Length: 251
Image 1 (tube, rainbow, N blue to C red):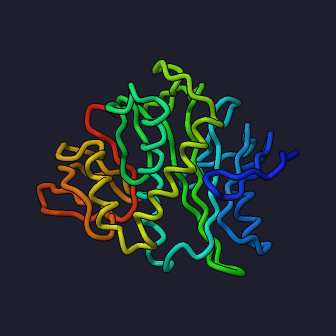
Image 2 (cartoon, helix red, strand yellow):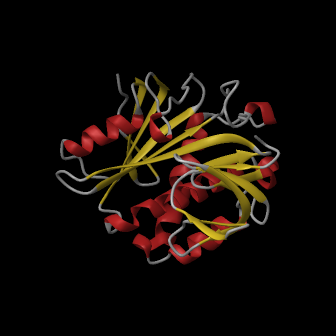
């Protein structure tokens, strides 16, 4: 069952008590002709998912929301929305819980860390028919986090931040509007990239990069103009377009 549509920072919002997945709902609406911008949120997800099809544990009390955008930029630039969303999420959490703001970092390509542990994840998906649409899915551990994860996890309550999903979503919607305006359909990515690097986890340190076919270690030197990861190892500079990143000593 869904509640009445409301506005979030001037954007339509449909809130569900329970959904399979907010991203799946947004994609289905896009295929049916829905035009964004539209926020979809759920109190609980039954089939939440992360990157590469991994399951996303979705108990009550955490934030699960997706933003549907129609034609947000030329399709080739859509992956930049990972950085836009990460900054908006960082802004929102820091606003709602100022005392933990200095402990927040963004992890390439699209996680938010608190004290080195994963607090939130972002999943970007697209749909081309009947119009080019992008869905930005965000899951934030407000009240609970899963144990025994490949990368350490945490939640806001554990850090002493009593932030409810509705409070965080309101701040997130406002921050997203600001960051989307800064991005300007890709024209402002240089500024987004610079802001992201100021908050980057592991920048200048040795990291391990896990690719489907291999793993390697090197120094995290930054991002190229397209947002790809730059890692310097014994063989020189490597550009990484997709993969999992681990700071050495935090695995």
